Amino acid sequence: MARAAVQRRLTWLPARLVATSAESPRVHRLVFDVPGWSGHLPGQHVDVRLTAEDGYTAERSYSLASPPEVGELHLLVERLEDGEVSSYLTGELSPGDLIELRGPIGGYFVWSAAADQDDRDTGRRPVQLVAGGAGVSPFTAMLDHHRRRESPTPMQLLYSTRDESEILARGLLGPETTITLTRDVPVGWAGETGRVDAAMLLRCTVKPGDSPRIFVCGPTAFAESTATALVDLGHEPTSIRIERFGESKEPS
Ligand SMILES: Cc1cc2nc3c(=O)[nH]c(=O)nc-3n(C[C@H](O)[C@H](O)[C@H](O)COP(=O)(O)OP(=O)(O)OC[C@H]3O[C@@H](n4cnc5c(N)ncnc54)[C@H](O)[C@@H]3O)c2cc1C
Image (cartoon, rainbow, N blue to C red; front, side, top):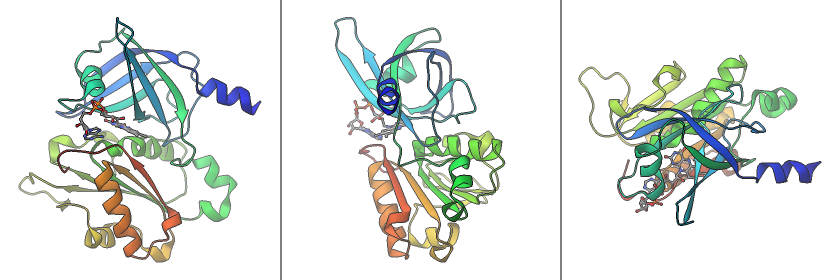
């Protein structure tokens, strides 16, 4: 049974793009129909495989931005101008086109309402999410799932992004979210400004004394500096889970 489940997860599946839209100037929301999809948990990701006519293939990982309750799979893909796969996904792939994906992948960077219900001790601990840029993608799945399930688990998000135009999944972000803008700050902006640092984490996230489970996701440098600051503030290293999207050549 377990072997069958693993084999199913690792099988490449045809995925048809059903919709694509600009979520921000640099990030596209891609919606795929994937017949045979086995379901996923919020926080998991997929591998995407592109195959050229000459047989050349390229694979990259993308977090699932939609909760398990939604039939189609949503990805939020940031276009990197010199990026092999992201520029194709955001620039050339059209509705109706087929690619391949496999998953769900990852059992560590996940949160689900059902797991909190099953494990009352862990389930009572609040959840703190900290995102840099497109790193908010897995958290949109968690927040959406949390809302649909009416989960009693306290959940907060601290979300760092360059400017107002780059805020992703706006419709989903509610009072649990604190946004910090790192570059252009509009007149009258009521949120935080500047990069995530120890002082901001202290001000805007669940305190160590409340034993939060913490998820950090974004460019590698963002994820690592944030995790280091959280440990310095007194959070248990074992309570911090990190998803690194990769090295960025410029700071977010
Ligand atoms: C578990 C996991 C989940 C991920 N989820 C997402 C997601 O939901 N959305 C998303 O947009 N990306 C996500 N990524 C990153 C994604 O897998 C690719 O690395 C990214 O799209 C770049 O691929 P590319 O082929 O376009 O660029 P490449 O051709 O591989 O690289 C082009 C240039 O961009 C730089 N670069 C590589 N990765 C990044 C990055 N993440 N940020 C900035 N610069 C980079 C490289 O150093 C290189 O100079 C995830 C990565 C992991 C490991």
